Image (cartoon, rainbow, N blue to C red; front, side):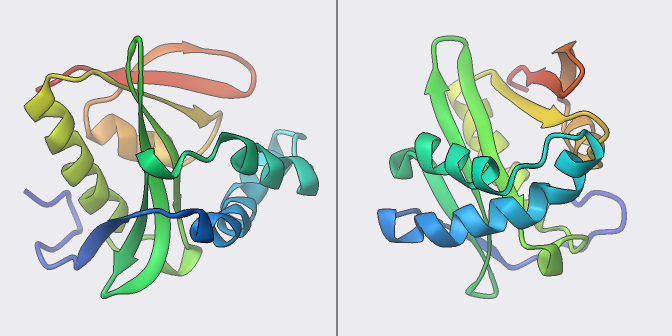
Length: 154
């Protein structure tokens, strides 16, 4: 079911990431996170890119395609305490069109089928937090920089 302001016709597809996707994803991360990191006094042009290079696991990462064009990425990584939704970045030109909700419906549908708890962290003050809350994520803990949230299977 669409969220308010969305249509059923969001054309989104996830394809497995490869190592060849890394640098475009690194650059997307730098663009998407810049405003929030600057607001928090934490932006470092090298570090924002290196953190994804260091953590990139193509086997758990998907490239998001909208109408078959690159629109972003997302990872769902297994861990001892559930699965972690990570590196969810949408190209600014693709934001506000229901793509984020469409991606979450796919990933959380899979998680619900498997009985997985899904965890994530989002930067303090990020508008993405509202999206996650609409999909049932609840606060677990927070600090000055990050908000940690979890969603139990439906």
